[in-house]
Image 1 (cartoon, rainbow, N blue to C red):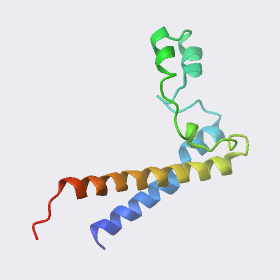
Image 2: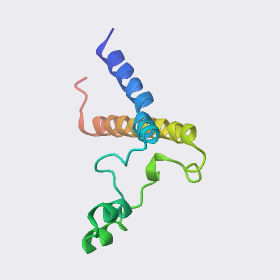
Image 3: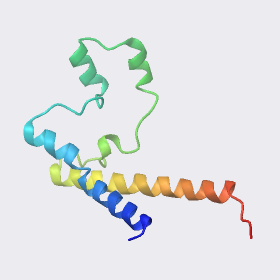
Length: 111
């Protein structure tokens, strides 16, 4: 098996395991993952929200907030898991596309 095939199998496994970060906290009634707090959770945990953080949090709006499509949050864990998988595939495709594009721009053929 070639290195590329091993990489593809590894990435595929990680893509399909990505919803575990959503499923396990739901099953065990756990808090959000460490470091993935929004301003609301941070204010609840710390008791206050720094003014600069509140201002900065409005600068960027994610294209897929919480890795889900608009309206899918209320559809249940199965739909959210599918959205996680779609987000992972989209992210991988974008990264591969950018790397290939940069390769074509910066690498010269010696032929």
